[in-house]
Length: 43
Image (cartoon, rainbow, N blue to C red; front, side):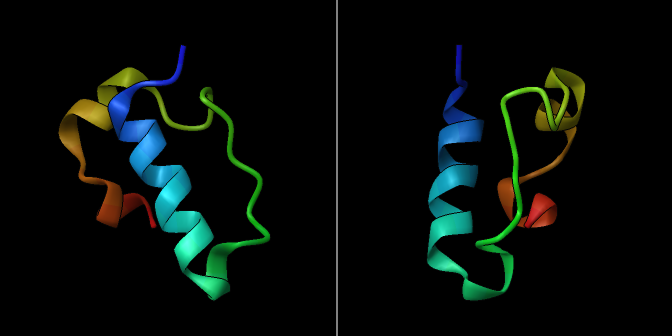
């Protein structure tokens, strides 16, 4: 199940041309990472 954080990440990837080719899945960033870091940090 995709978290709210991951859905925000997908939107961010779609919005930034420089990272659109990245392949991320809901397993790319652990739940612990999602709790400790903002989506902007991941991007």
